[in-house]
Length: 391
Image (tube, rainbow, N blue to C red):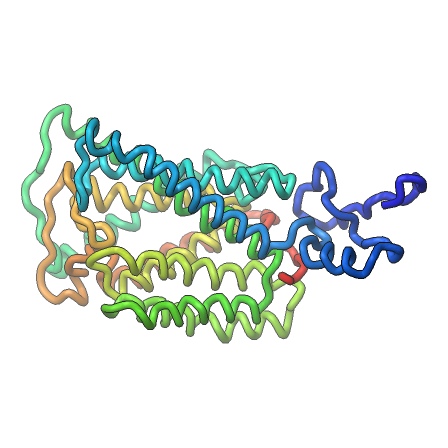
């Protein structure tokens, strides 16, 4: 922009763009032709029509988040050992709460840094939709109902056995409240990073070929892992190839949301492969429910339904029913349950998420979500519009 020419102003965003306008545009839509070639190339590499390109933004997010995670972890370790007396491999409400607070702070810090760099509001990352409280509460209701349906079918098939009530009196409410806070933080941490920031950012800067490269990289990393859990990632990756390719060639300008959904869902399954006790069904189920969460963003306009569902699902299996959660056995649960019979149906050490029965339950949740919210007037999500490609 030439300061001597008052008519030379940054080009405004298109009226149809769902993204909030930048408070102070970082870079004009076009670099003056009089600028040196090196400057024009650098500006094109760093900035697109929507500001900082998605690839650089994601790099900043991961670097800042990891630095904060390490720094907070080192600073809080003496508190964990000497004050809270938390030991390794514990899965108690206190240890889980301690870990989730650190993760939420690190993720929130990384997102905040990216929001400042991109000059956006944090709510623009799939958190600014309408009826947020309503969607959060209905998501929580759906999460508890879905997990209860799964446990009920397992009980009917004799693949899970109920014992006695493990808690009594006021301890029921104390542990229930503690686990509730833990899993609300879990919902904010995992959905905030994957379905909010990454889904939003990848949507505005992803095409099929970049999505295929990212998914292939995850599969390649899985070759170095032991166990059968990684097969859940492979299945998720293969299922998404054809639909995303068709969308890319038929509607390339509007397929970014679904390309990002393929990547974030596969990534959500991939990050769960590090949990002990996970099997391939549990990993694929994590990727599948990730897809459902992305659909909820498309239909409701925000990630609040997904956050509520995620928190309630984990609370129901960990505290209320006392089952294993992604391979972790909880302390301080209300009911007592033990898996029985074939691991294919009981889930074994993975818990209900590792049972083959979780797949039809997820399909039922998806169908109900589409039937309920698909009939409403469609809300345009910040993640659904055509956006420039990643450079």
